[in-house]
Image 1 (cartoon, rainbow, N blue to C red):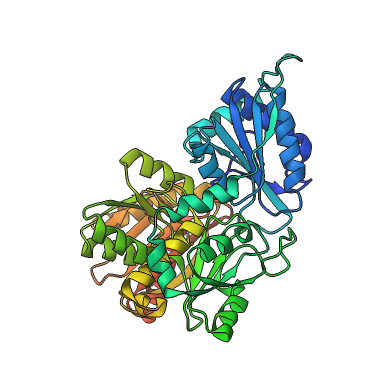
Image 2: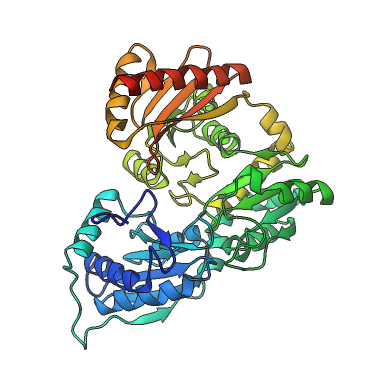
Length: 456
């Protein structure tokens, strides 16, 4: 972690006892507690990582030292904790999770009173308190109190059920395979699905913070077991979660694994059929499929920078009720404007129940795109100027410069060029109606970038 930066795009993350130690966690917590103020009520919970209880105790110590009261929800999905903050009218919350990172990582997310992660401006205030050592500790007789809040997971499941037609889903008796990634999705999703009348087969369901079943990132290459299980047991659907259960990736009855754009587009289509002219918030990294869906069903796309916190805050700012990312994150505003894997699963089942169609049939009805990726090495000190020059060269095209440069072409193909936040490279994402065109875009614009880098 740098000398003046704690927060990344999604909270504070680091390897346990190296980049993120208990001593640091206590100091971070005193900065967070100072930010919220004395006598505020804060919820704390964690995912299945082996270091979760350790960091929860350290953070609790730091918060109570500043006079904050801490409610301990113990182990729960991130969206369940976010819902509990709002539902129990807490002033905020702290979630101990490193989401999709490997098991040796952990992290700290700070939640505002509406259940949404705090803004980047608020993160900066906490960083200033941390680095300037200006945390204020309470007097010995004004320390915060700790209480247990054991009902979080059950309340969350009940809340989701209010947003779908439970009777209609139950009529279909769907068989669903749940891959819980040995983490917190296993505490809620199987219960939710049984309440919705589904037969549930679980894999990687036992809680184990070493993630023995698969890595907690639900990428297609990690989901072969789920795909095979869906086919072997003749299930209607498979769903895989990340480590803190806010993202879900789906598998059709034929074992086909679908990236998040495709299922988000199904939800967007249904939402716009019921709520025409609504806003759909999504990062510029999303597929043209989302734009096609919004255009076809009279919706308005609001593009954002990449990052779930940005999507949540843009939804809040624009009063939008639906957001989504290509990585399987869907933000269903009527429930809560945050990523929520179990809510997404319920919405997909409702669409299948309403239409009477299999997931593969619903996906086949969509416009089809082929995606290719590439990267070009670029020194850090050149990144900003390279972006300016590329935007200047493309100014006559249909472009967005919200995050990198996104170019939409007349033949429905598109290209996103973004500087990596973690490596000295530019990343290129192309999509087109045929694979050759997508590859050509990567090659052509890779060369264009290399030429720009050479001239700077």
